[in-house]
Length: 403
Image (cartoon, rainbow, N blue to C red; front, side, top):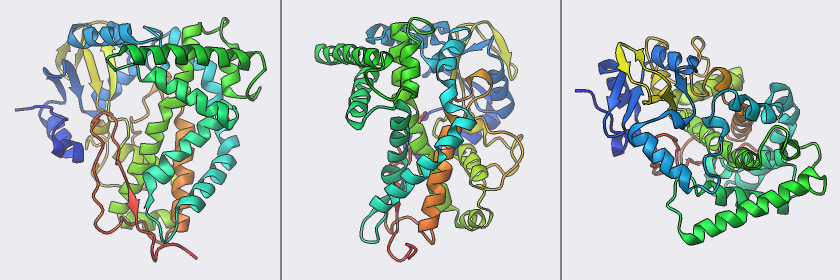
């Protein structure tokens, strides 16, 4: 009998055997405990992500337990039900995305590649030593996105730290039961961030050519005050963990497939390798959608107001779309993985995240003759099944560092 229980330790450690069974037995499956439809086949996930009229991004379309829970969470938030770029639909989504899109175009990203390369070298010089443990996730993957976001914010280091603290204080109200103290902290963060953004808009702080300045000056024209705050939070925080985990999961895939390390060193096609890492073990395992109207998917009737999880990690391993899908292949070609979404909701930060991962991996492989885990290292995946994290990726350095 088909079932879906992502909280089991065996699933957290390796979800793909369980997902393969579910896809084989019930590719469109209703999970009563989650009050959600779990979709694991490539064709059906592709259909969901393409059909924005039926499968909306805004959770307001959800009914039942999921809708009630989301409503409760929104009422507790300091920002209330302010639209978020990843959880909104046309025309709101287009307006929010248009405000930040220029800072994530391939042309812009290529312009910051040199900065990313310098930052990777600094991080490796600082942390990669023969007499010191090196954690590829926390000493490289987690630190690199923060530096790049700092560049985009265009604020001096002391201001940047404060902006990140304010953004974190506001973000932490999203899923938490707010105590009086936490709400007071969030309210203070809201006022502090608004005041700083006002200074940025007037040219009194920050880089006048930065993304933060562009956003601050859009208030009143394209953005409401609350939308400006929400977008600032998303830019400051949203991509950090996913990019870090892309790098961590990717390094771990190379550790476990040493023959692919050899092939990657020979080809030096890090762009293709990063796409395979996204397919093979994506940091964002599923994408939530909410039905605006009743629909039929994979022969199952899905009512309006339903929550649907397009399990892209499962779809990326569907043998109907990918030959030998459980094999990690740095030169894989063929169908497009779904890890970054599709269409108007394709991840706006994808070009930047991919360049960060490419440069980080290239730098690491240039420094180490072989990428191997520390002897006796114990890996423990993060507990959140939707956001797959390696936790730590401790690498050997002794005898493997290039001279």
